[in-house]
Amino acid sequence: HNLTADSTPEQLRKHAPELNVQLHDWKARNKEQIEALVPDKRKEKLTIEERAKYCAKTGDKWDIFIHSRDIGPKSNDDKEIVASCSWLSLFHNELLKVGVACELIDTYAKDSNVTTASNKIQKKRTERDVANNQLKIPPYFSLEKGLKRIQNIDTTNDSSLQDLADIMMMLCMRPAENKEENNDNPEPRTFLVMEKNPERARTLLIWIQEAIKARKLGDPTFSENGKRNTRAFSEFLKPHKITPKILRKIGGKHACRVHGGPNPTHQHLDLLNRIVLRHKIVRLDARKNYAIDDTESEESDSKPETSDSSKPQIQASSSSQTIEMDLMLAEIDA
Image (cartoon, rainbow, N blue to C red; front, top):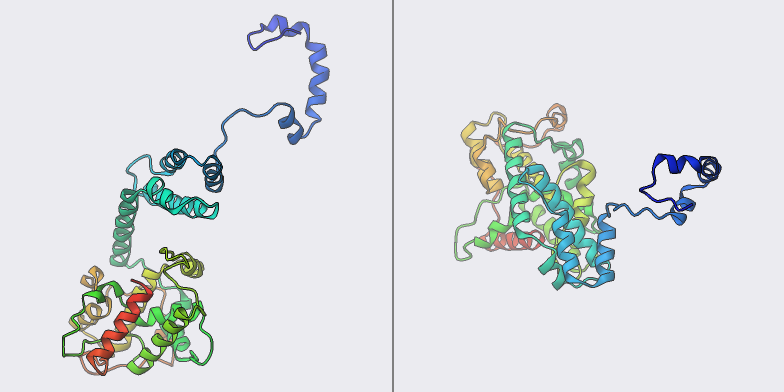
């Protein structure tokens, strides 16, 4: 009909009857038929997985770079930075799945500035939430339920991710700081955890560590190729809406209650918190900022043991034992 996009309404009107017949036939076609006849040229937004597959198909390092920048944050908004960091991490994992070399990913897909900014934002959020008493403890990881599971762990059986989570909560330390431990110090360092028996705590730690070394239990921090990867353990905790870092803080709060005595003073709780957590969060008041939604253990008849002394009671039997425990813990979450 010699019709073009520039055809006037008068020209189109001459062919209206014929076009009208074809239009009804056109509407009868399904979406797949329409797309086959007239492909949609409009740009569609690719998923993270599709981006990775495209980069693997082209084999061009600059495609990886362009897509990573497109996924990255477009402003300095905190929410956008944190979300973009998560998307970039997913993009890296998808690139690995489709066979893109780690060297190319490290060079052209990673943005250390975004990662650093996201970590700082999330750290501030956590400290703010704790200060505002908004860090809720999931009922599943309440003091009573956590202690009960820890006490019922049978070291003659194979370990599980649940055992790993409970033991990490029990140890409630930031292991990276143990690398600065002075091995020549003759005095045993106070080691305060939810489990009041240091030998039992040591046994559980050795048991879970040996399971990881023997690959009976997946490494919570590294993949088989040696790359840092906490995804499996984080996915295990995801239904409870907590992270490994939050899990340790929960364990720290529980340990303060276990060793705090019936009527602990602010100074005593502050001391316990410094011993247990060993990071910036210890400057907050442990009693005032104890997370809400954990009243189940307070109302239970089976309350944890308490001590009348204002001095922490748990110490390793020797400095070497304490250091060995610290080093093994550091291997789990360095």
